[in-house]
Every structure is written in C-alpha cells, then in structure tokens.
Image (cartoon, rainbow, N blue to C red; front, side):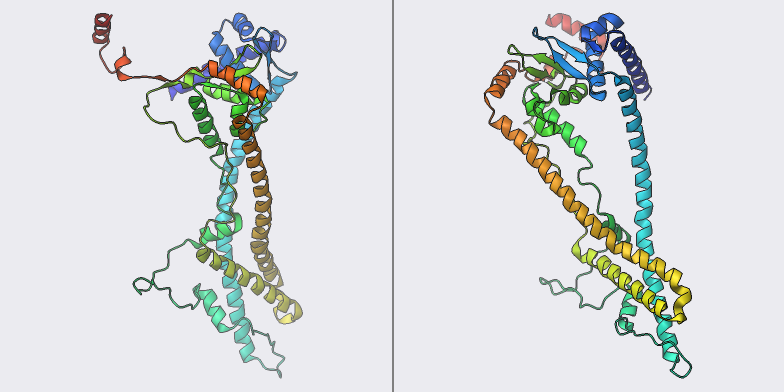
Length: 418
C-alpha cells in the first residue's frame, strides 16, 4: 500500500510538471518537446500526455512526416480539474445513493406490512361496531361486501387457501420455496439493479482481448464496436492508449494505427477467449423474482390500494370516521405510490431498452463495417497487418533471473550458458 501511495504521488507530481510544460509551450506539443522541457523520460511523457488528452478533451495531430502532436484547447486545465471534481462527486453520490436506496428498500416493505395491518384492524373495528349498532341509535352502517372475514383472515395470516402443490413424479406435497418478502417488495418497486453494472469491466476485457488477438496492432475502426464511438473518431482511442500503455503511429499512407507492445508478453499457453462481435448492453428487466413470489406482492399491493381508498371514501362520507381522515390520507398516498411507481418504472424500462437496442444495433453496424471494409479501410487494415507485434511467451527455460533464487547461482549459470 505504501509503495502504491508513493507511485501515485510521483505520478501526480510528474503530471503537474507536464501540464506546466504544455502551458509554457503554447498548448501544442510533442512528446519530445515536453521531454526536452522537463527532463522526464519520453515514455513517461507520452503516457502522461495520452492521459491528459483523454481527460481534458485533447486532440492528436499527425504531420506529413508521420510525427504525432498533441493539441490542447484553451481552458483545458479547468476542464481537467472539473473532470476530477465531477468524478469525486459522482463517487460520493453513488455511495449516498446506495445508502438511501437501502433505506427505501427496507421502508417500503415494512410500510406495506404496517399499512395492511392498519387497514385490516380498522376494518375489524368497523365490522365490530357495525354489528353492535342499529338504526334506532343512529349507528354507522358500512357496506362490507368485498372485505369479508375470509379476506381479513388472509391479510392477517399472509396466506391464501389454495390447494397445496404436489410433485407429479412422487405425489408428495411440495414445500414452498422460502422467499424474502421485503426483497420481493423492493424488486417489484425498483427492480434488481442495473444489468450493465459491470459494463466497464466487460468493455476493457473485450478491448484487451481484441488487441491481443490482433497481435498488438489495432485501428479505431476495430475498436469502435467496443468503445461505442464513431469509427472515424481517433480521439476515442486515447483512453485505450492510457489504460494499456499504447502509442499511435502513422503508416506510409498517413493512416493512424495503434501499437500495444505491453500487452503482448504472456506466460499463458491457451486459446484466446471468445470475443463477442461488439460490446452488447443487456436489457433491463422489470423483476428477476419468480412470478409465483412476485404475484403475492402484487396481490397485497392491490388489496392495500383498494382498501385504503375504500376506507378513505367511507370516512369522507360519514362523520363517524372523520377523525381518521389524516391517517387514511397517508395510507391512500402510500398505497397509490406502491402501484404508481412500478407502473412508471415499467414505462421507463421500455424507453431504456429501446435505446439499448439502438446502441447495440449501431455497434453491430460498426462491426459489419470492419467485417466488410471499403477500399480505404482495406488499405488501413493491410498496413496495420504489416506492423503486427506478435505475442511474446515467457517460457520457464528463458528465465535468466528469478528473485526466488540465489543471485550468485543464477549469475554463474548465465556465464556457463554464454
């Protein structure tokens, strides 16, 4: 951990030096310019320039001689700082959202139980009072055709009297699968989370595998199905260069290809992973809970909704329950939200999935362009093919130094082999 902190401090210090050099040199620089200005290694300067350009919307420029320059816009430092602040706020917001989301998740399930119990108890009180009242003393008569004692019993026991399920193979009664009602309520209201929560992990894995399969040389068009950016957008490759220590180079005809020698060293002897044609975004689901479990939540939500409205309407019509109107108004609001929120979420899911489908089709189109390239892309891919780096397997017999072994012994063996 200490070494990691020291590395981060050193990297931050070097980045500040490079940013100062960029400003001093007029915001249009080459790696050699910055290296000469700062005295830093060219490799370090190139990596930092790629990082700053990716984070501050910088641009790559290619000369007729094939040299690479970096152009940074006016105020790029502000954009760079704003990006860091934005990332910090996003991280804090994600943590806060998780806490609030968990509290909401628990509260809705608990509140549904409390609301149903309250409605059931109020109905029991009404039925009891109604049975003792008569027309002579002005008693309050409530119509309870729908809410009979069977439904009250079901509400209180959380069960319905259906025949038990049986196993058709053995004829024995099946035990119902245990479920968590609170979690099922949460799933009904808010779903089960983002299906693309690990999208960035899948993206970088696919890009790294593509680079390896292409033997360390790729083009922006080949990366487009995984970055999601336009194939002609060379700036979209900058984050890939930063992450995998790549470098741009220019072909004889002026095309830009990207080399990643750091990804070519391997100790593995295996077939490459199967690479999807493009980075697919998964569709949102309304709920992953089995319908048998979810139907109870829906049933109780509907009973709660109509029960709250029934009591509220009756209380508004008769003075007998007028003092309960504030409580019943809260139950009505809660019962309505428990039905409205999933309905709205369903509509949002339909819209999100439509956009996801459009994005997937677009990336599929980018892949098709590489699969059946035009003449310009054929030339570019052929030039990239000539630069293939190939993989470098680190074999045990090629090791000349191992920190696990004695240094003098290894040095002596190396001299003998020479």
